[in-house]
Amino acid sequence: MSKVISLLKNIVSMKSVTPDDGNILQYIANCLPEFKAHIFERNGVKNLFLQRKFGDGIHLCFAGHVDVVPAGNGWNSDPFIAKYENEYIIGRGTQDMKSGVASMVIALQETKNFNGTLSLLLTSDEEGDAKDGTIFVLEELAKIGNLPDFCLITEPTSEEKMGDVIKIGRRGSITGILNILGKQGHSAYPHRAINPVHLFANKLQYLAGHLFDSGDQYFNASQLVITDIRGGMEVSNVTPNNLKIMFNIRNSTATTLENIETYVKNICSDLNYSLKISVGSKPFLTNRDSLIVDLLYQSVKEVCQIEPNLTTGGGTSDARFMAQFGIQVAEFGVLNTLIHAVDEKVSIDEVEKLYKVCLELIFKFDLHGKGLK
Ligand SMILES: [Zn+2]
Image (cartoon, rainbow, N blue to C red; front, side, top):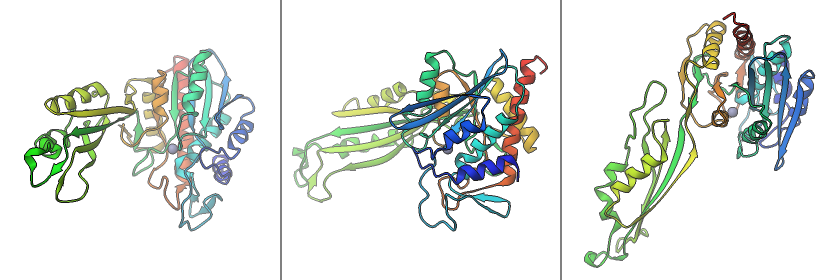
């Protein structure tokens, strides 16, 4: 069995349901004794930052999380004992993202020369609140001027075939709660009441499904999606005094909270209403010409024999924090078909390829640093 598969099996069998790291962080620090280890701990959450300076060039960081979501019921084998079957490893976290962690660790272990600094940032707070994890480590690294220049996060990004998707950004998420205010009354005397449903009826069409931008090569259009709408008290003779509408927009970098607020306020300008809008996460996009995207693209293409698509789809990830600190970040990993699902598994072939991509990326950054490419 190869080193990367053997490490994967070991850490899958270390139960690390978020935010518990299951002692994986210490175990990994021991795997890389030549790296200087820092443990960053806050509110019971442990994070590990390993760093090795080989030379004076760029700082390339590998990052990810060791925590997993709970197993749930209905597994055919123990989710916290890695099982090998038909060229697959089965267990919680095999796709999301212990195969990524194992690949990064072994690639770093195998690297003997590099024209710069290599590091590994691992958190056990990604699947939970994500407040004391990656963001906290970056805050601390920023204080001492030790932020990486580039980062690869090995979250599972492949969709149908290993290597088909690299993520170079993520959409943001903005949530709104709109309350249209009226005056409750009897349905037999509508003239005495102010019915917010009637007031808003012909305005709903401007809200539902509205596109704030038309999207581009990397982002889908930013669409307003209504998630809840309610008013009244489920009877047929009382008109409501309030109509509450909740909505969410997964936004690209072209649409901001201010754009959305102005638009909704314009629609409601002749109404009595209240509006609360908040940003859940900000969108970001790493430039296609950035070294991390370019060299990762080449590495994936060579190792997986496929031309990867560069996308920004899916939910949020810790990459958003990297972007916030000005780190050029991309994400690439194994298939994500069974993440958070029962009987999660990963093929040996995918993990071996991911490990080779990590190694190839280090090699290409090294060549680039030496001015050879
Ligand atoms: Zn993940």
